[in-house]
Length: 73
Image 1 (cartoon, one colour):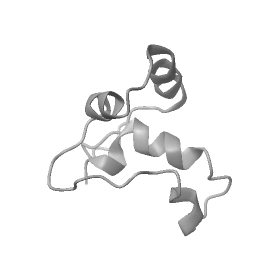
Image 2 (cartoon, rainbow, N blue to C red; image 1 turned 135 degrees about the vertical axis):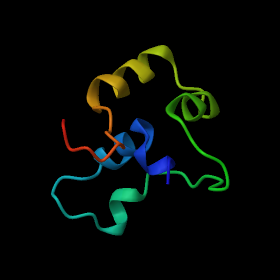
Image 3 (cartoon, rainbow, N blue to C red; image 1 turned 90 degrees about the horizontal axis):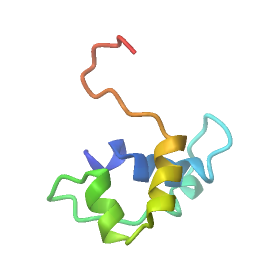
């Protein structure tokens, strides 16, 4: 699911997640999307009209996710 791998999604989870546990409440800030289409950070930033400063803050806080499965990071 591409949505869960975006920095946007992971940032919103980070705001409420303080331990390794992920109870339902840590996802309360995450908006539901149409899962029939792939999501990118750029599409989400545009959809929610994030400012340049907000995007820069998210980008500085969340590392890219390696979806290749190589484990080389």
